Image 1 (tube, rainbow, N blue to C red):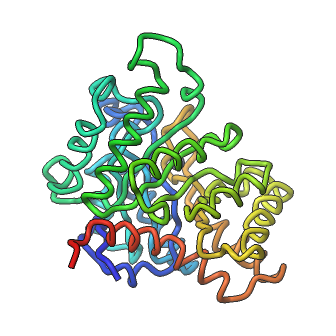
Image 2 (tube, protein in one colour):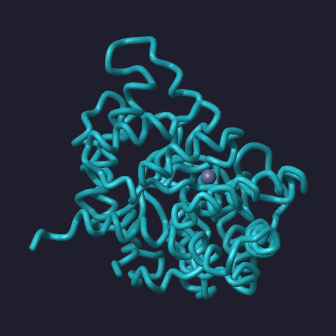
Length: 327
Ligand SMILES: [Zn+2]
């Protein structure tokens, strides 16, 4: 057991239950709440409260919100959702989204770690709400490594990942990564984390079900990390949903159920790109489609328990163990 911070305060890891590993109450960009034609806090809150009620009915007990400041994290929204007491534990994140914010460019890993530890220890923006996890995002920008030494996008990402690893070890929280699966960016991330002495069981390499290569996923889980099969939804169509469910089943059959996390990367109030109509059912496809599909195709109830409960729980417990004072 370990302590997990949620937007309503600390819980025990054993209370997490069925958990969606990568979602967003909202997502867009830092400062969007200052643009009333983009973001309406009351509307965002009422849609989220409704959507959380629906997902609770479908058996989900916890959700990891992977929206750091630069992806539009909104503390007013968290506070309203916390007050509504939806019955779903929401864990929120510190960290950085794609590219590195200007104030972290060229900074040393220890400076990045200090930056993250401020939120992890003191809470976010004076609310008393503490993040339970660190989010990192590595995408197309990792390809850019031309430019002034130490200031290339790749160099900034690498130093930030080192800083995140150091903060994770001090605070005892897991790291969850958005990765460009086509470029297999989980591999260089795990190399850095390993070099920093991080227990890779505290790491989730997300968006891995965008990969078309099951061997890549096996390489990640064999190193001890979790893989986030966290982009799942009806908009992709039944054929693609079945392909993604098959990827999960393959890892389960290979004996890695406890290292597979399922989720949607969805939000009922998405402000990423053109506004989308509210989708109050955005968090239902995993519990109502993918889990039944897995059971129909040979997964056991224990396998489902492993992917829905134990996989994400072990990342919190492995992280907490790193920070525990040596006896
Ligand atoms: Zn996401």
